[in-house]
Amino acid sequence: MLLPLVVALQVSLAPPSPDIRAMIRDGARIVAEQGDGVWPDLSATPVVVQLVEGDREVIFCAEPIETFVAIGTDETTGCLIQARPRELPTDIAAATFLGDQPVIQIGTPEALEASRADWTVLLLHEAFHLYQYNLPGYQEAVDQTGRDLGASDIGWILGHDFPYADPAVGDAFRELHTRALAFLAAQADADVARAVAAYVVARAAAEAAVGPGDWPYYEFQVGQEGVARWSELRLADMAGREDAEIAAVAAEQWAGLAVSLRAINDQGLGVWRRSSFYVLGAVEAEMLHRTSPGWQDAYRRAPFSMGTLLNDAVKERSDE
Image 1 (cartoon, rainbow, N blue to C red):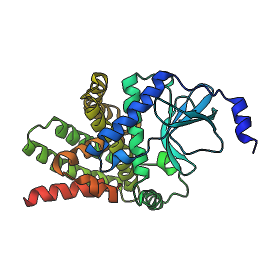
Image 2 (cartoon, one colour):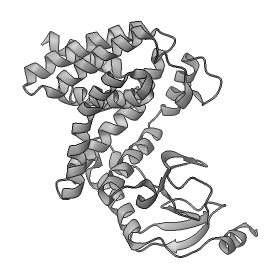
Image 3 (tube, rainbow, N blue to C red):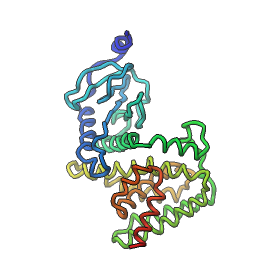
């Protein structure tokens, strides 16, 4: 087969810079060493990274891929590295599948205008998506959400026509954001429990305002992206015990949840659109972390059921 030879003639086979290889190594190490402190068996998730550089893509830790040419084993990460001419945008940061392999596709820190610590924390976010993809029944749950929304293709994930501009929906979410802010400000356990209970009431009102035809989209986004944001912050907290720069990024992003909620209320749901759900999902995951130890096991079985998990958490507290 001539394809590998053709690719080799079109792409540089020099390894990426020592700095970026060290960052990939360090991100994978955080997942391997700290991951189980956040999610069961997260440490076992293969962190496959497709680095997008100026004129090529270099993939770390993947099985051999026909459209890539092998560079060799990288002594920094300990992984096979392979390259091909660039096909992806240089500012990408996403998790997807390359063939059957879940991979992180990510640009360089320069392309993403990110510091070393910011880039590492972003890698942790995408690594959690790889973990999600490996959950039993995950793809079936995604497909079921699409059917619930009446979608004919996968474009619904980014493009579902959620009623962001509906005034009643905007009012309901404004109350939801206010209750989320109250939770973030709560310190004592009793205050936390009351804040979560009030949030659950406001969440039910938001669901009623949105209606059953569109609400599954909210549940999907808070379970998919919101929980990923919470997971990156929890992992960053743990890594920050030994890395002051990552600790600073984590602290800034935790504080940013409240800043974002206030901005959404000021600017409106129609401006933030689904990005607002990512913030609420991170807050909802923290609510479960503080009120329902072990909630991760239930999430693994039904990742787009954050509302059910919150309702159960409140009920358990009220029965005590």
